[in-house]
Length: 93
Length: 482
Image 1 (cartoon, rainbow over the protein chains, first blue to last red):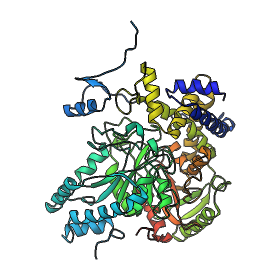
Image 2: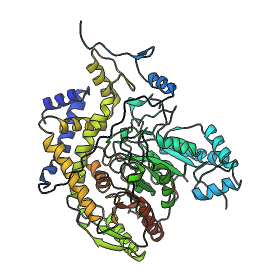
Image 3: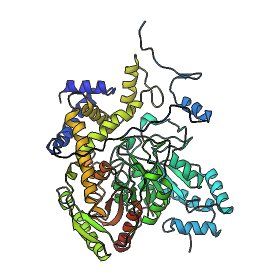
Image 4: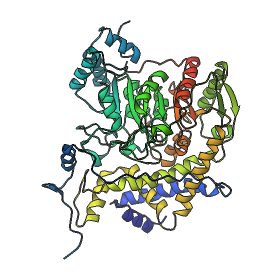
């Protein structure tokens, strides 16, 4: 892993890392990849097992009758006004 | 019989409550006193709760003849399980001021029975670690030797129980986070069958692996808490309907399979090997049959885990965006705000796993890592299912060594990961696994033995573990702070 790969990965991960953190991360990730790379040697060519997780779906309806939960959730938002969570402008004028 | 926080069991305390030998208030005050005494040194709890209302409610249940065995019993709760109105921080700066807006399903059912929550316990940040050294609020120390770790990630829960500040504790287990600290602190810990305990209200880490489970001082007490935890919950999409839970019934004797090549690798300490040999000998004396088994591909469990788990971590933790809840550091754009908030809110191990997960899921690497890991995982699940046609339980040491010293593994992530070598396969296969104390290592630190069973084998698992508990005669040594 090159440093510029790490910078790209940090960007994809939405993580602001200091230069120092980036260097440490590069060496840690390289050593972890060195360990997990052994997965390549696992021979599963004749394994037919399938255990794919199944999505469980439900109707998209409001089930919580207690409105105070909504208020408590709103209280957790760092920036909120009235009944809305405030977000930053995404599209520039 | 007189009350003692060190020796009184749950059923004994229940009897004392019912026979009016002691009030809930007086009993809880003793545990609280102990918690206040040990916590400055051990740091098992991030916060001790005001228990007044819970104590009053428990006493009312007892006085009106509505008590269950758990009424008035003190429990320590891991900081990633939501209790409405209390901070739930997952030991992260990201959630330092996060107040739970609702009760986890299991918390609600314990509340109903009048269980007394003593406080929220320290852990590795977002349950990522094996020593609690990754807590943003400082590590927890092992009550049996304060120079050593209590294990992790549920290290605070284990230390709280091992230092006699409660009679039960709740943890979560994604790759060994209940069983490994149980082993390091001389306790019983269970990771239940995937999908049998509701995770609604538990802060998610690796959703295909996470389970909530009990810590206790004995097998029968772990079973008591487990019985309350297992039920279907419509709020948790991975919760199995009751009709699909085909519990295996206990038998007289069990066949225990030893995956010899898997557990005799390098990195397993001599004292663990010797203790395990003794355990097998005693298991035979208890009437069980020991056979050698081979579980194909099981040695790939840990690399599989370190691909699938970070992948799920990177997606689960994407919810921390600086907008809805948690820490926010404002930047110029939404992306900038998110990056700054996460950069400041997450600790090093959390960042490592997010980066790693993003990598193994990224274009060009997905097939070589993530898809391959899923295929190997499926093969391991199949291999385990085949083994359980021949044996009742797979028996292994719980950990490759006893509790290690602070700093011994924290500088080398892979070294730390290897301490979960024997516990990870059960999470990979979605099967239940229990650790119980089996003796001591060369430093007089507890060791544990692990039983892994087929899905829904918990009832028989407790039965088998109890028979081992009887022959192992684990003697709880007083903690340095007793």
